[in-house]
Image (cartoon, rainbow, N blue to C red; front, top):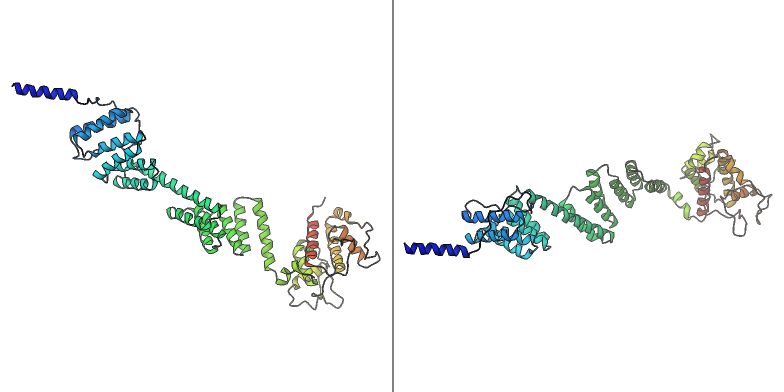
Length: 452
């Protein structure tokens, strides 16, 4: 009897000297750390006392008393060294205290004991992220979600990190493209597309990189895919238009830009369309027309084509001769333009019904052509024509009685033909292609001036 009383006394003394645990915490009205995964206790794990201490520790943790929580988790582990939910609890305490290495050690011990324990895998991911180990953290989160697909917090965290990683990759790809490091940019965009193959803006931006790198077939493929995924996005049409332009398909480029304009008005793009249409029309012209700009001397056929193409509306309104008989232009490249210019009486047909399209045009000839066009412009805009009245201008090489003088004086007064540096007109000198284009361009500008 005395021995039994002594043993009981010793037990009471030991209990008094051991660590005293706080009572069970009150339920937290608002959990202090709501994003932490509850370290649930699997069936048949631990003793009832360990389980009790563990959940007491969790309660103190969510009440914000980390010291009480730590004492309870440690008490649970003393009850059972393999009670890994308490290791997770200790890991969470270290995590909120920003002791990331210590936290990782606790989580790793739990994972060793149960590789499919979602709270340990999720906590481990957070510790890894805090240390900058994003790739390994993503693997740990993925493992946590596979272990317990019901963990909404883990799924959300995983989606956010994947999106953040992808966004960083896209930002890096854009910086590489801006730095003209096109091969590296292409690789970065390809990586982003592997994660989001149905992203129209990624296809569009990669298409632009491929175009700049000269890989036009690949650029066309990505731009077409972007347009398929997002048909009403004007930027996709712009990128596709730029690719067609780089391929020399100017009419198709203009069509794509026109579609973009219909979706979103843009004046610089509108001007670009006009330029493309003009270039496409120019490229479609016969070689003889395209050679005018660099010609040292233009022919009557080339001059007729310039007037007919660049002053089309003016000449169509001013057709004065319905039937023209020309015997020497059949099969000539400029035949339709010659007919238009002759019907408007800009270039004459000779009495023998020949046009002589290969005859070189001289400055006196050009002055007569210009004066006839100015007559047409004057019918449209009489007030403008009043400023062209000859002012008795004198040319050292062209007296007023010369047959070319009236036309030469009018062309110079209207600012269509410039005299030589010494004031002479040089009526017999062949007209260069550059001079011919400049004269017709000025005539077109006068024809487009609004009437008052």
